[in-house]
Image (cartoon, rainbow, N blue to C red; front, side, top):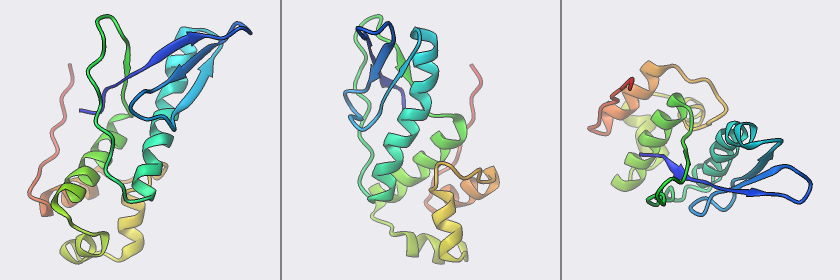
Length: 139
């Protein structure tokens, strides 16, 4: 769902530049491709956090070209982003989500802070009041 294709470009200084066509705010690099892809996770999470902070819809991930690598946020961040996306699609404001959950606004703010280690049961509760459920799959 949040698998974003990456462009890996060798720099003239021997590093590998990582960019995302769908999330232009996410830019990073690494000493080699493996390090660049590892750094890309953090860059993607940071880039997507700008959309959440600005209360904008998340950019859709385009289909990768054949053989193109993709990067996704960590599982916890994917769950948070899924709840945020459902909330946005339904036109539910954070204050309304807080009311439905019986939470204070700072709790809702922390839920959508991608740097905050929210508890999974809080994410599930938020999904449930939006008529959604969180599914975990290990492949």
